[in-house]
Amino acid sequence: MSQKIKFLILDDSEADLKLIKHELKSYFRNSEVECASNRKNFIIKLSHFKPDVVISDYHLPDFDGLTALKITHEMYPHLPFIIATDSASEEFGINSIKNGAYDYVLKKHLKKIPIVVEEALSKYELILENKRAYEELRKSEEKFRRLAENAQDLIYRYEFFPKRGFTYVSPSATKITGFTPEDHYKDPDLGFKIVHPDDRYILEKVVKGEIGMNEPITLRWFKKDGSIIWTEQQNVPIYDDKGNLIAIEGIARDVTERKRLEEALKESENKFRMISNLITDYAYSFNVDENLNLVSEWISESFIRTSGYSLKEIEEIGGWLKLIYHEDLAKVLEHTKKVIEGSPIKNEFRLITKFNEIRWIRNYAVPVFDNSSKRVIKIFGVAEDITEKKRLEEEIKNRTEHFENL
Image (spheres, helix red, strand yellow):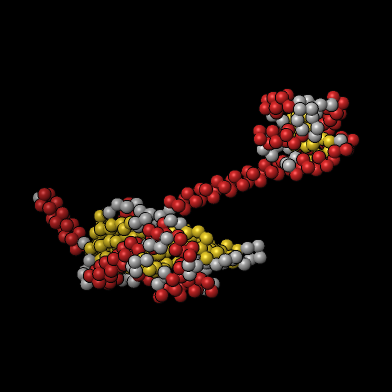
């Protein structure tokens, strides 16, 4: 071994000490050996020398190997401890293993001691590795539990084997549903019972595999007081080594307020579209995807009548930017970036119609933000055709310049 190993030998026989030390130094070239022959000296060296391995005789003048073993493990839990005993007391070696010693070696076979030490060190490293893994697992579980206990969302685990039912429900269940975690533990079917009857088919589809277990689902739940809330659930399937589904872990969020806002927004959009189709000005809406690209959602009929393009035709030619007069494109892109970043805009630009006419447009656009992420998810806009106004302005300008030159 390249790593330096520190040995502490406890024995009152000078001959045995010398022989054990010789065997260790011969095999473990990079090693350091200290010796003790009594209790006091042993405790001092154990404390200050801090050995990697202790090798102890079983019978000593003022105490025995089992006491030395106990003292060692009180100071250094799990430290490799090996008993060296004579042939007449082999039973004491076996008894020592039962009490926590790693192994024992008969003094008439001391040449075996390096192999016994190597096995003890391997066992010790395995114990330390398991301890580190257990500590990491404990910390991870503690962290998860702290997060779960303080989370606003409902976190749960539902097991099918060995017994069907909830094995964990976070405290937020009480706030969200009115039912406590204990209520869920007592009734394995409570999670299904609180689902609105019209939405239970969604859960049935998940069970049948018609909807992926990992796909988010939206369900209405009955609270304990009878009121209805909207929830969004995300589940993760847990399988055993044979591929059998044994549990589901998931998280559920109350999205009632978001649903109300979506419905209100939808109603407002419908009214907006209905009114926009009756006026001569243009109106439109874009969705903003996660890559900040604009996706045409709707445009008023008045724009279609003026431009000659339907929404489908605009997509076919490569998007609405293809309609912008080339000299105005850079400015339009600059304003588009501003509204995507969250600022309302007002601008003017020229548009080329399907009939190859150039029309002047005055545009107003406002961003719509997502409540949770605060990013822009939609853009609403209205625009008017100011071509005639521009023509009149140009005519007035030309006449003024004419009179000034007279």
